[in-house]
Length: 155
Image (cartoon, rainbow, N blue to C red):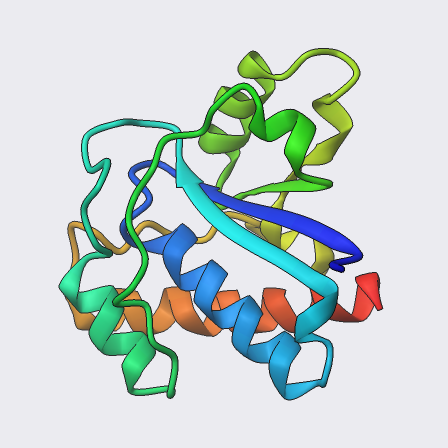
């Protein structure tokens, strides 16, 4: 049975949060800790519900040995605040949207994903959607660092 239930959240759930779901699962499995986590991702918007991750996210993750192809976008639901121990926003805008949805008792569960990397000047994972391949690589680099820091904090 998982010890921690994590929900990674970005805007549309087709770039950053699916990459975080895949990368964190991969990092946890490599460390022999995969069974300790239940991991999902979601978006604050509903534009892409039911769609797979962006093809560039799938390709960038695949180059690192991580398969995102089975994921499908979904929107954050109010019951997620009950279901998950940590709701990890990819940027401050997503965090603010989540805090607007969360009750006072669940608000502490909402955190910036990169807050475990305190030496970063900006703790937002940049949205690569409107850029090129390099934006997905940059986001994955940050997500991998953030995943390793989060895993260290939770184990």
